[in-house]
Amino acid sequence: MGNKPWLTFDCYDTLVRYTESKSAALEELIRQKNGDEKKIQRAKTVFEKTERELQLGPFIVLNEVIQTSLETALKAVTLEVSHEDVTKIISSVKSADPFPEVFDVLRDLKDDYRLAILSNSEPDIIRYNVHKIGIEFDAIVLASEAKCYKPSQGMFKELLRRINEPSTNVTHIAQSFYHDMRTAKELGFGKRIWINRYNRKGDPEYKPDAELSDLNNVRGLITM
Image 1: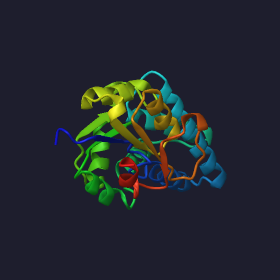
Image 2: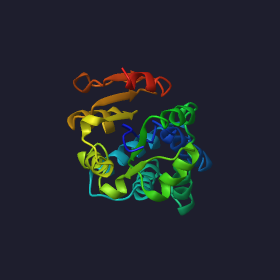
Image 3: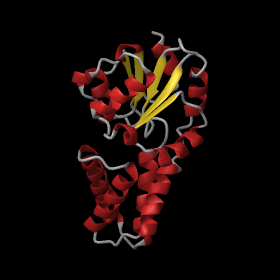
């Protein structure tokens, strides 16, 4: 067990449908308040912008980030926000479904690798996500422990400290170029695999070692 190499994974939008689940809940909530399509799109844009800005500022835990982002988004479209609304959005993150291939791929990889999650989350949210994934991870490192959010190097340094490995020995696998690929390169991770689920453009300066549309061929790329 101790000699198995480490594979580290982002969780949200890499393993589970974080953005899709949260967006669907936000849309439903606005429709219930008689908001139209224009308000839905505006609220989604404001929510994402606020979430990112808050994660770059003084540290607050994810549920507070989500609550403030929701309040800001609904205020931007002149809608009231209730405690129940906040609970619904946070519940949508907790209940986000894993992508279809995730369980089978991770179960297979566990035979030969140690698996870790590196997530902009907190214990009372991530435990629901891990339960849904259905795999036992060898390490879970969260923003609430590092007291910062990706793309901060502090998150990745806390991961390396926890698993007690130099970055060159670790393969990092993630969907977000902004949150993961850049910092993993700056810190010299041995291999970086970009799971480009949403067909986005990357930054050539931080070109990953490999790019996939899902996790299915990860094993083959690790051993190349």
